[in-house]
Image 1 (cartoon, rainbow, N blue to C red):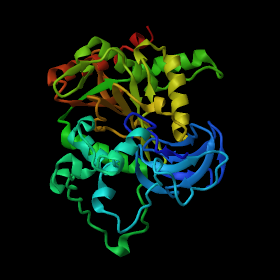
Image 2 (cartoon, one colour):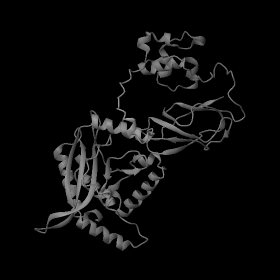
Image 3 (cartoon, rainbow, N blue to C red):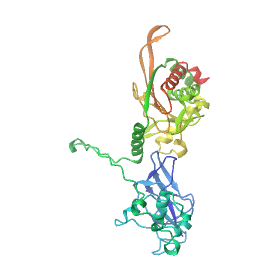
Image 4 (cartoon, one colour):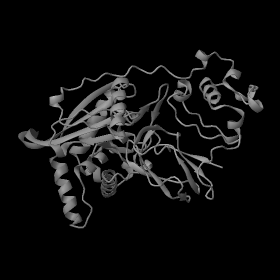
Length: 409
């Protein structure tokens, strides 16, 4: 018996993956838990383990293949004592189809539908795909194929009605630079393509609005210096970003109407602040999530943010490290950016963008003096959050930042 090894869903949002590298060859024996491939997702490169023992009968996908849909077969696993795939198999175990340029376009382009081994015998793959797309009950259909197998003709549809392929959208046309201006051409990796797709969808489908407040950071910077000095050389170092994430969590607790998510006909009010922290890595951006920030101490936030940043830059994030998140925080202050306007990361309804602290004249204790001023800009989903609610959140955030003892209370 052979079974399919399929492209796994390594995160809740993963739809496609890249088979970066095979760690086995055809004919190799594997045991459950053995590493068999490296899969590149939009977030990281992860190792795929064999779920059962056996022998690699056939590698169906070549290394470096992009955009493999989740659930698609990538290899065939046979019995450990079996050799390669025989030329013929029993009728109950049909040989896997090989891709052919002459294959029917309707078969090649239709979406794959997973069916049980018993269903493979009583329904053809094409009929199963059409029935799934049309919501048809196969139990109510009598098959006229061999041994009573249900085939496309048994569904009572014309070929036009049975075609489950959606008309592909017109591909955007991007101008090509003049050849003498191009220094290099680089194919987009899975992460870059996913960022491009998701953020384009965000700007096209989410009605953004933006609010900016300017915060005096002098008291916060002084408190951070005291905390780190008291911790000593071997203690946990607190960053400005750690304090900002804690301030955002406290502000959401004070303005819960800003801690929501749009759900079509529903509005979800969220009970726990899970912050997706933007981390720049080679080739893109990832957003590992710190859970329940409101309940964590500053030192615990610092520990988790360091650990997740290190894993992100090493490409070792696990799905649970970056799934979820109720809002995002993106800090470009270390690059000297005066102000930023971030793009919402759906399905979240809020992202907070932080800039650098700039020394400038400010009203201090009734007079004018130099102060370290930071611009904080939030992007809100107007379907879920109104302007006044967003303004209350930003005012609460500024008040907490400028009274930093509330962050450590």
